[in-house]
Length: 276
Image (cartoon, rainbow, N blue to C red; front, side, top):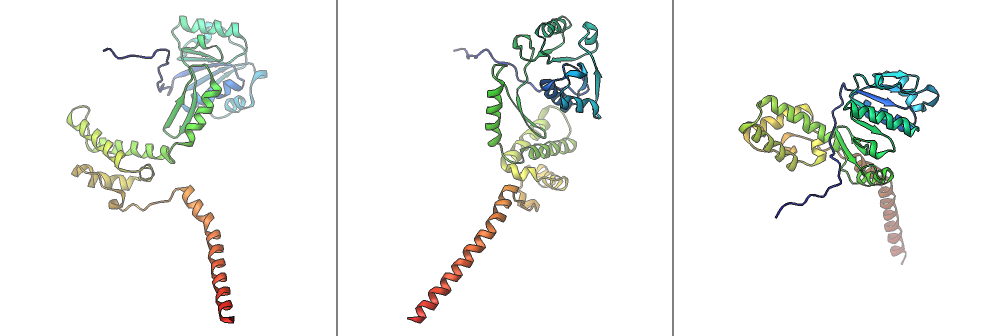
């Protein structure tokens, strides 16, 4: 029996834009979000938009110390696409948007045209970001609002400090590669298995608290001996999550009041029994 494949999906990938040249045509509200997204990916950005149509946020990006080249005008044609790796359009002129899309297709430049799904080589989704952690919710351009609603529901169920845990595990993985270098073969398999065991054995909160010194202890005691010691064995002190400590701090006055009330009640009962 052959496996079944449900078609109609997009290929969700993490696109590396570091030092790539991204052209954004437009400077309104939607364009502002696009600017933020590509700057966060460390891209070099060119913006083409009349200053009269700039959103306040887009203007702040342009005036800030970001790798942005700004042209105060409308799109000028194919010459504006020279040396460009990606194009994002966010303008109200549908005809102009389709023209830009056609030029990009001719030049094999990936393009996204806001609000015109059939003119998009890729879609923007609703993104959750916590340091190195990125989660994309995509509806394939069909319902951005529902994507945002679903994103908020997912956010509520994510473990606290997940981004910190991922960053710490990434650093531990780098230190492990330095200690046991090599690509492929038995060393790579052993490294992968040990890292999997660490992630399965330690809680997210514990991983998030890993510092450089503790990582070296973990490698000395664990990797070198083929084991995964627990945090207490390495002398780690548990740091309560903010929400827990906050709850305890909030509960202290209430507990004090209850204890005081109980003592007062006992004293009153004692006096009543004596009076009888």
